[in-house]
Length: 112
Image (cartoon, rainbow, N blue to C red; front, side):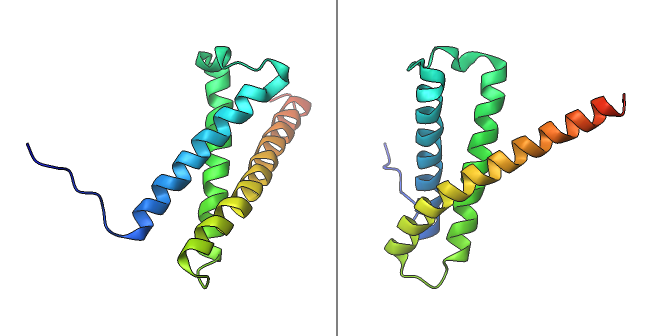
């Protein structure tokens, strides 16, 4: 039996950390959504689609913030990119959802 080796570069740890934080944040937001305080409805397709949209937005916000903060030292870069990236990710997701809603309303108005 051989021991598995972990990657040695810092970028791969950063991606795993950002994915974990994104997943935890999405599950937490789903847990507190609408005062239900449960993960019971997570298996419904509509909820999975909404959660995946939030996960994509949060992860893209963290990656953009991480690339934007290239000049900082490495531990501070991870912390700042995570905190600012989550805020940016929520904003990206809300903009995406509102723009999709506006497009649907436009198509309904045009009777398409």
